[in-house]
Every structure is written in C-alpha cells, then in structure tokens.
Image 1 (cartoon, rainbow, N blue to C red):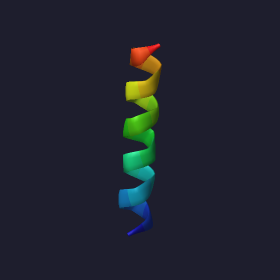
Image 2 (tube, one colour):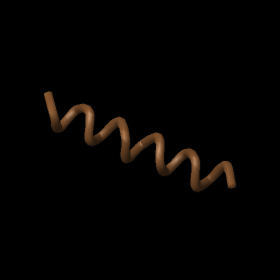
Image 3 (cartoon, one colour):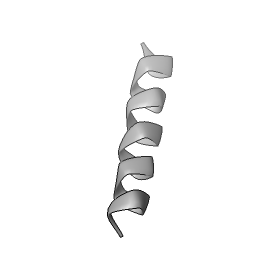
Length: 20
C-alpha cells in the first residue's frame, strides 16, 4: 500500500513540475 501512495505522490510531483 505504501508503494502505491509513494507512486501517486511521485506522479503528482511530476505533474506539478510540468505545470510550472
């Protein structure tokens, strides 16, 4: 379960970086 949350956070961070 933690791996899924980590992957989600990483994906959101990637999207945020691209959005900037």
